[in-house]
Image (cartoon, rainbow, N blue to C red; front, side):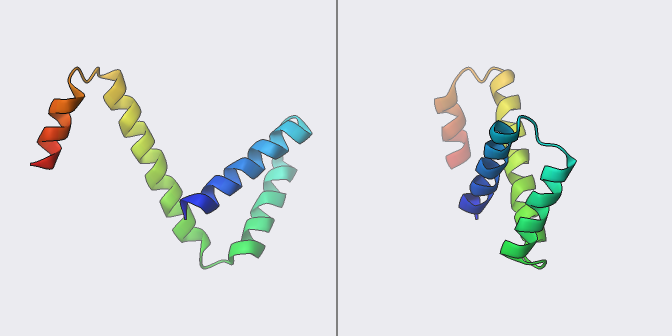
Length: 80
């Protein structure tokens, strides 16, 4: 599933480079292609996975910003 999300992100980045800026029509085209490729039933699952990925990313950046001084200690506490 992460591979599919990665491919969509690469497609958006490619369109951004190719067209300069992703505008409303490009977003409509991407959504239409996603609906054709995945179907309407699979899209909510993909968005849920994308949301979880964003949540994990935010949590990781907040942990990094808070200055985790000893990552080894953190790993040990998680394993217990």
